[in-house]
Length: 67
Image (cartoon, rainbow, N blue to C red; front, top):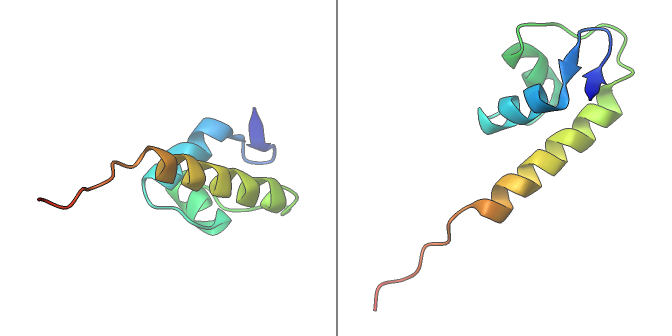
């Protein structure tokens, strides 16, 4: 599904940008080699970024203290 129609940025591209360190819409645009246009996607992109970060944290391995 497209998150940004103007620049054709899909959910999977946002997810990949988050895995690469993006934490703001501007970071996602930069990671995709594009620049923002109308700003309509900002809320949806922030939601997708938060969702991707939450998924990353849910699958991070937990380190256990040595006995």
